[in-house]
Length: 284
Image (cartoon, rainbow, N blue to C red; front, side, top):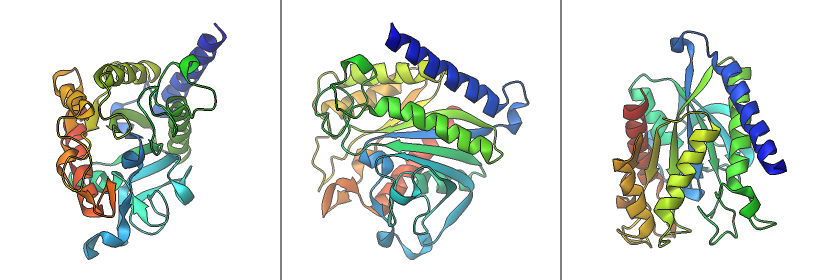
């Protein structure tokens, strides 16, 4: 009962903050759409700025802001800033970036001003298997003591991100979620059920029952290390047949030869483009 009351207080506080910061009774055109990027290291991203073509160097996307949270955001964690490729600008450390570059590029091309809250946890699991780097499991009492509770830290990060946008003068409204995970659970038979449960809990806790949710398949191209039809990829593709859900075939892009778990910088931009197009189609 104590846990239930605690969670209800957390959810109620989030709902109150969301209404306060989005201006619930005001004209929807004054609201600022915000998208959530969540998952493990490929959500945060390990794209290397130095590997991008010259035209991407020192870019700032003026109309796409980002708030970084989680375990992989280094010097920019907890700050609201423009998405960009300048050192320490929208990157997970001083030289790396995530999906946000491709997302910002596509949104900018469409003339779409939006915000991003990015909250990734390196190596994290979707369930209670392989939890050494943390878990997105949503039943707090079942998470082993000492295990990083990614889902509940994510809820805190959303509250903090929304507050940061509001303090900066925006009226944020969460418009969609982008999920990139599976490398810790590629052959789990329960992956589809686990993902369904996570989506339902996110929508419940954010008080948004129809919130769009898009996931990306994990890499199966050489030098990738996963199967095209691994359980995680099958579950992610199955989202195409579920309400207000979708997927992108990010697994078709090759990873870095020296780091086969993470995509090259240029491929990560392309994957961000795909995510942006899909979530834009579903939420605008």
